[in-house]
Length: 355
Image (cartoon, rainbow, N blue to C red; front, side, top):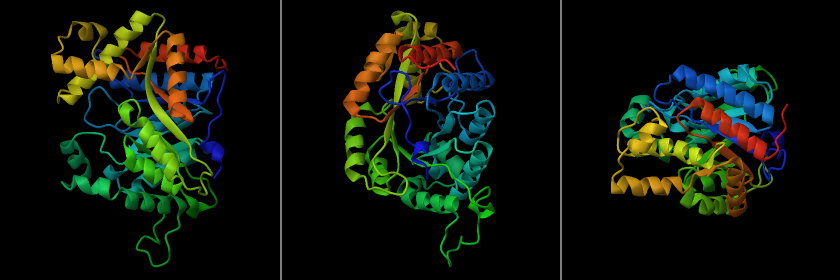
């Protein structure tokens, strides 16, 4: 496999490649249609400005997040772009049969050859009841425990190389190698703890860590990944990106005001009241309880926000502290134009080209 499909090239004055993580957020007063059109805008801007890749994340039963079907969204983005890498950040493998994912991402690879990444997670991306509805089973722990086996099965389907005598030896994921020589999407493992870090290292796969919601575990997980790493046909050295929550605005105060909307969304999610992303006015007028305020302060401490220069300084510092090989930026806010503007400002701060 071409390692360039994994390793990015830093553009402008960025110390490492910059990428986009998209939750397809839906703000109060907006629709899923508008959120999806914003994703296209962001993908086109990211391609034009030299971001390396654009990933979308699988979530379910969350009104403020319209990314429940990553493969469908990626096909839409592929139709509106021509160069930027597109992928899942990630597909939650326990929610799906491995053959289904192999077929979906084989189809995406056929649509956009050489541009597709398959990022995989082992969490459900939702609450337990929704996970049970997705999987048609109450055995929810089985998905996490069986993740290595599911991953191995998915890899076999993608490579079309089940051994003779295996029950699936005569089953082929199509589009795929059975139709002739073809590339396949590189597999990434995603995580917010040490399990996937160790597994990715052992298998010699690239690793993506969710710093944006598990910041305390970032350095330990990356250290574990690097210590566990064994060279493979995929990679000869570890490659780790981290997801970072960052929002730039023309004014520092406005940036802080916009980030509060995402913090209130998280409060509501954590207390079983998920909804559309609130407006800045809703967030400013909300009366946080002492426990909620403590959560918000902790959450915001891991969000890099401010002017473009302040965000660049924060991103550079984070990259130095973690040694991340790539930064994947998620800009969560109420208004679509705020998110688009943030990526443009960050690109300006790093001198990314206008093409």
